[in-house]
Length: 515
View 1: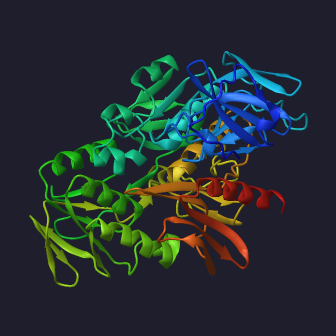
View 2: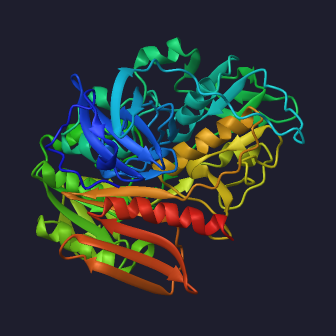
């Protein structure tokens, strides 16, 4: 790690003393007009781009693990040797420079031309899997796009098709409830790939189409327009659908749900003239929507059945802290209640009270979109059941993202996680496995949530815990909260402790590896 003053930018081309960079440390400098990070991994020196290619996070604030560097913002991981991005959410590599050491002086030379790293040889004991004649991806979300990206990065040259029910190409979905909804992100920031990239990388993107059924025996799918397409390997990445309110008025034009880019645009349009909105649900989506609407100056009431927001996910301590953040911004909570009807501007609560609203946004959770898997006879388990390679009960058919339930090596349980980074990383692993790599998915889950100027990072997975330890102060917005069961650490929440979040991720990885 590095505690270097980032206002200092030494000229790395002229050389620096090797002792200025501690083992597994970093020095932020410049080469010409480029910001460059000089990294010492063990006794080797590397020079790479200073910023993550996801949200431009400063890598100097991250950590070095082996011959990789991890971003403090959203835990992307890059190879120091090649610049290749090894873990989502970043999809693009960082540049590299040649490093020269003469005695105790280390100098950074010319920028290197990016090249594909050599792939590890397959163990002789493992039989080679045939390369699929084509790859089909069902779903245009995080997992689907990450899978398409990865098969091309792996050098696969066969046909790749993404079939998506959405109107828009795959987008940066976390932004839909955060910056875009708040008015801080432009439309062209939202797509994960520029439009021309699909043609450049020979990915056939089929929008506004659903797969009606999958035939694993004939290796074909039936689309909702009656057409049939064949595949060599298939990934189901259909994600999850918002839970709809079963109440009078839930289908009116006053009620909005947020899942797609079109949903977010529709809310933005209605928000332009709105003064008061009711948000149903104190989930992450509901609270992030509340924060974004408050950023637009709109009064917000939150209605939720819980006694404390997010209590089930993060416990009472963090839940109350998040509630206090919103209350300080003027959000009014109606906890222990639900909405019983929506009629025009009148929202009636289960307790008998009413609220006036220009419109209503519902965020009461999601359900995995398993209809096509169920119709096709795949094994289900509160989601699509997959093995450690993310393969379903049908050989050659994989599932990833919100829809998949997998055996988690860190908890010893089968889990399903509804978070963006997990979906992308699963899509990447599934892509390599469709190409015959047989790679276990063992990444530690990670997600982040933004509430005004407070970012909450969560690593691990704890559905149940018997101990919560707070190191630091929630009120001071500087803490780490550890969730344990039977003395075993399962998850860690951090606020303004990004390096500690990264370190906790590494420790959770190593704890599993040592068992």
